[in-house]
Image (cartoon, rainbow, N blue to C red):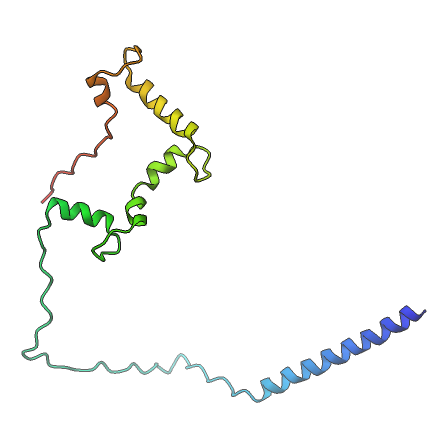
Length: 155
């Protein structure tokens, strides 16, 4: 019985707090300014006029010149991602992430000796054409990374 009375009192208190809260929000909305009327279909919205100017003898900035980089400079800038003329360790290692992910078979970002050994043994077995467990110079040449041919110029 006591619980029912306590529940009823709490329900009335909750309803009272809700009423005060609701009335407070209604008063704030009453003081808000009315919305601006939307233009009707007959009224055309006024377009702002474009400023007029006479360029006269003015000239824009000169376009940047293309510089001929040496082979070593191009190689340097492949690693220098933020172009601050210095290569950090993370910039140097970032180019190797795809190769690392190929070796990391279980995807835990740790390369164990077993993962490295399996991939190396697989590469060796693929290159050993005559299966004599030795690589000749011709067989070893097949292990070189495959280079993409340069695209022909369509100038």
